[in-house]
Each structure stands twice: as structure tokens, then as C-alpha cells.
Amino acid sequence: MIFDVGANRGLFTDACIMNNPTDKIIVIEANPNLFDYLVEKYKNNDHIEVINSLISNENDVLIPFYLSNVDVISTASIDWITNSRFVNCQTWCEPLEMCTWYEPIQVKSRSLDSIIDQYGIPELIKVDVGYLNGNVRHGISELRLHAKDGFAHLHPGVECCVNFCR
Image 1: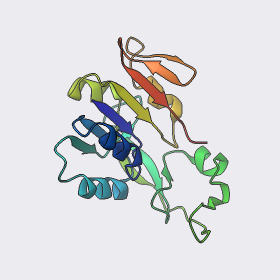
Image 2: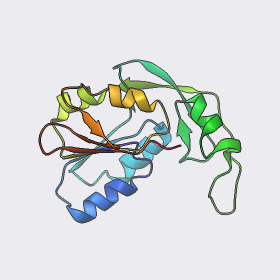
Image 3: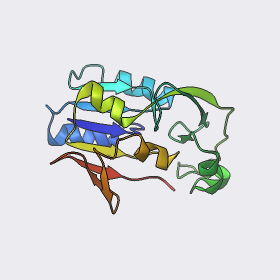
């Protein structure tokens, strides 16, 4: 089983499907527009479950989440908006377009521990989020996580690759 945290449009999930189409993949995306896109994209794949949650260190908390007019750029962090590679919100889109940040919406949070409790221990967790990076890590108990150089091992044989966008 694989957790794809911050799935965006599902490119990592697609690569996993190509490598092993029978793996169970839990796809987690905070952006409700991308969540709807992913539900539609994977609706005929019984091995994929899509969850609309913001992964954090707390469960069932409504967290302000910022969407932009560019569907793949969203965050729960004002710091990320002002200090990430999207400062001034110039994107790599063709043609180069400026994005606009909208007023925040509220997205319910879940911890990685709660996802593990519900689905079981995955073989791999991919995390790629532009928000609250410490809170994602603290959402998994110290008994399950021993991070080193961006990689973590969750119980024997479970790997976690963490890539926090900056």
C-alpha cells in the first residue's frame, strides 16, 4: 500500500500504477478542486481511494487553505505564499501566467497516524505539500517515524520520502 500525500493531479500515483497496477494507493489532496479531479480520474480503479484532507498534526480541525486561479498551486501557509518559488505567483505555465490568490476556504485536517489507523501501515508514503511541513511530520507518532535526510522509516520495511516544496 502507498500513501500519496499532496497528490496534486496524481502524477506520482500514475507512476505507481504503471509500476504495480494492483497496489492499494491512498491519494490525499487538500485542494477540493483537485480532489474532485482525482475522484473523476480514478473512479474506475478499485485500488485507489481519494481523500480530501489537509495532513497535519491534528485531526478534525478546520484549517484555512488558499486556492489560486492556477489549479495546481494552493497552500495552507501564508509563509509559503510569500517565500516559496511562487512569490509574485509567476508560474511555469505556458504562456507564463500570473496567479491570483483567493480568500481562504476551510479544509478539515487529519494526521498521518489517523490515516494509518484507518488503512494500515503502507510500504511507502510520498509527501509533497506546500504548507505546514513540520505539522505533517508531527502528525505521525515518534514510534512510527525515524527521519533522516528527508527519508523516514515507519516500522520495519516502510519508507517515507518527504519533499516539502519551497
